[in-house]
Image: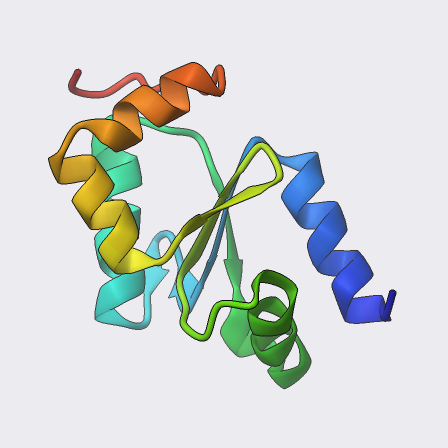
Length: 111
């Protein structure tokens, strides 16, 4: 495993919810990352945001790691959930809330 893969693997496994995004949760630098941040904040989910813009290696590495071409990418309990469209659709169908609940991740926000 390369250094960047090891880093990603460690991040994904050491926090229950990890969002690889452009920018930070307080200052998203793309609309898609911003939408996922809004959804997670609305649900009151604690998560770790990792800014992929800090490193080209990380930006490419996360795409290789998940075999998914776009950012943001959401991981829950080490499992890749999806990007912005998938997260938004799951949220609108109340599936995201159920999924988080099933995984034992506390969502303090709206039910």
